[in-house]
Image (cartoon, rainbow over all chains, first blue to last red; front, side, top):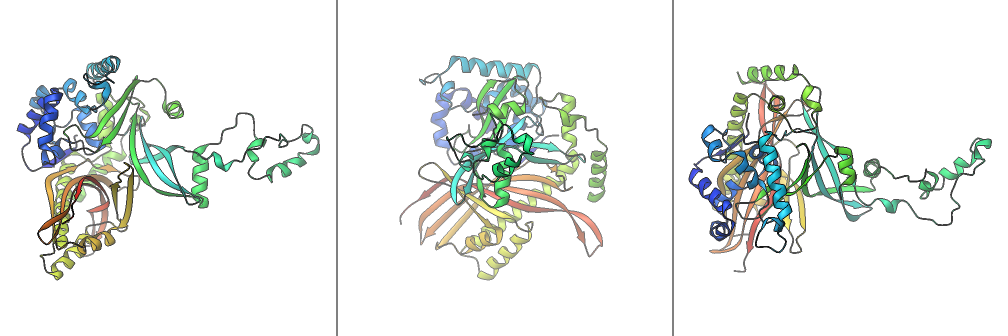
Length: 285
Length: 211
């Protein structure tokens, strides 16, 4: 089943010219300038992440109708998937100082792998990780945190997004102390840990009583502080998708808000990946 | 009829194998089918999409009417009232602004307040035009049994001071769509109804000029 545009006019002539424009970037840039703010740009634009997935899987044409054999012959996946990349990425522009031969080769390998193995993007895969870069207020002061979410399928086939992890600076909650006086004495066990009461009343420095290498779980801290009213959630400034559901690969998708044919939800980075979700989020900078 | 279709669709969904849930990699063709089954059948989807498109068109028309200073006050008030009826209770309008330093600021308002503000904008004339585009994604079932989708529309706004254009923008509006069961007191039966939910409005281009 495909998702669809409901569009009230034909896009065929535009589609053909768009393919030509994207195939020849220099020519495309000149023409694109003339077409700004036209409806055609908004039709070409990948307006929703869902639409990105449909184009990636080639289940619908540019009009949003199910991709038929004629469309698939004109626009096979090996042509469609390169169009889903950010074409303004300096690594992809041959005339740019930042041009990267290795990145170009990596993209070609990715497209070849996806096409040859017919790898599809499962819209409900846990390997689609949404990062909501969010503005919060910590005791009234603005701060940005990164909230990672993915989708869970419930027993009755319902789908929901769930919070996987939160990355942010919560370290100011723990005070620092270098006097080395905060510890539970070595013989405390013989006195039924009477000192434990003293230690756990040492608020602000409690982390010194935990094991070496202790790192607080940010998600738990975040939920606790929100619950206590210390943190107030404002809004997501930006959403980025980290996709590791294609075996061996990681790519990032973000929304390019620009008045060009190559706009909307596009691939902005690509690397090889073999990490699972937990390790991937832990490693993510 | 529609209800029967949906109930049948739900029954099929409930009996599905959960094998696909543990998939952590890209789907094969077989797994892709399981993914599809989370949603309604193709015919149901087409029906709901058509109805959703009609709701979105209705909303667009109300916006055009209530924003237009040329229309009589009664007609604009009626448009505001009717537009609100399309929404799920508590729906919000979140508008994002791109600040000169490149950062994004967002303001959220209850739909009632957004519509009231739109009606009283400080321009002598307002023109609102919607592009002939509406992208509606597939419906996905939520854990609460309702079905969810998102419709994207493009709006062009022009504000005049006398005959001079003093503000113009193009915004992309992503509208949450909710299909919920409501009780029809007249026919004494339950049926599915489409509601509009929260809206995210993203400014894609704006121009302010001094008249």
